Length: 207
Image (cartoon, rainbow, N blue to C red; front, side, top):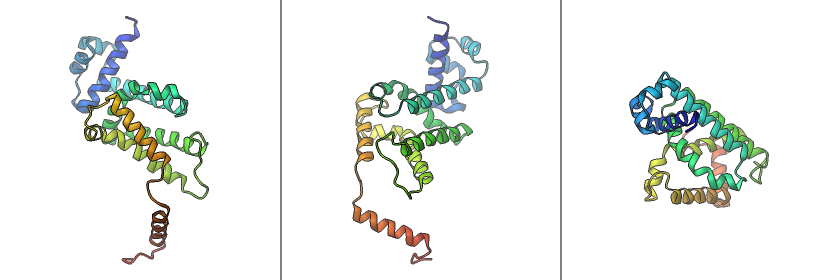
């Protein structure tokens, strides 16, 4: 066992325990049991629970940046992302639901990644000129994070256990379908846009 292995095992156990029980509910003893080490070893590497949480946050930030930098066109990344995402998605969901300062940083980090991908042609397309890029990026980020926050319900609906690889493939294919095909017809889009413009200019029937 290398010198870093116990620290990494403790960090991974903390990610699971924090996601399962929340930051207040998780205990050093529970994290130690999950990692298969003594509570003393946990405190040797991380003197406080806050220090352990900071380690988890740093790991998640690094993982998100790594995924963003490699991009969706990296087939190896797509094929091997399950292990990383299975560990960090429940943790991110817990943090986002708690509306912590970390949650705001993650939202902005993810939004920046989506902004780059939607405006630099990385996905093989660009946002049309005249569209509200800031709003589109913010809404897209919130929708993506919704998959993490509603993670358990998503798997339940698919009749699968959380992080089931077969269900993950189904989810990824569904996301790809929604990203590449129109889900409303052009005529409906025209009517909705017209209604939004009327609302924007105070032309609604109740205004």
